[in-house]
Length: 261
Image (cartoon, rainbow, N blue to C red; front, side, top):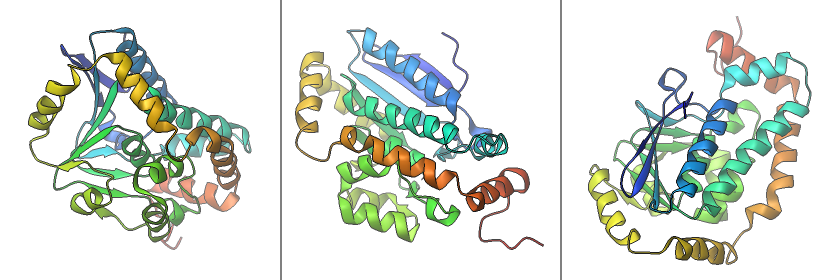
C-alpha cells in the first residue's frame, strides 16, 4: 500500500510506523488518520506481529490538529458538521489503539502537543527521550482537548489531566514519567523495545486481546464518553473566535495571544 502521511516498515515481530509530515510538525489530518487505520489493518491481519511501534519524523512527534485543514473547513462554513466528523474520526482512531489485539508502543523523541498527547495516552507503552515534552495548549485557542481527555484520564487520572488542560504548561519527560504518561525515559529506545519484544513475542495474540479487553473494564470507558467528547469538540470548534484564531495561525503564523496590528 502507498501511504501519504506515514512510512511503514515490517520487522519480524513489529510493524514500525513513522508519522512523516515533518514540514507540518506531524500534525493530524484526515489523510493521517486514514493511513494509520490502514497500517493497523495490516498489523491486525498478520498473526506473526505482536507490536506496533509509532514514531514521529523530525523533532516533533505529533503537534495535534492540522490548523491549515481546520482553517479551510472553517472557511467552508460547515458549522458543526465537519468538526463532528473530524472529532469522531480521531476519537475512533484512539479507541482502536486501546482495543487493537497488538501492543501499541509510542516512541517519543521531541515535542508532543494536543492530539499527539492523545496518541501517546492511548498507547499501551510509551518510551520517551529526556528532551521530550508534552503539552495541551488547546485552551489558549478557546478549545479543550475533548477527544484526548478520556484517554488521558484513563492513563494518568483526573487531576493531572485537568491540570495539564487548564495550565496549558508543557510537561517534561521526567514529569510525564512521574504521572505515568510515559513508562520509561530513555535515550535507548531501541534497546527498550528489544527487551519488551523479547517477552511480548512469547504471548499469544489472543491473550493480548483478552488482556486489553479485560483491563478496559477496570476503569474509565472511552466508549461511553465518545458522544460527550465529540459533541463538545464540535461546539467549541463552531465558535467564530476559534475560527479567527485558527485562521490567523494558518495564514500568518500568529499565535492567539498576539495582538493584530
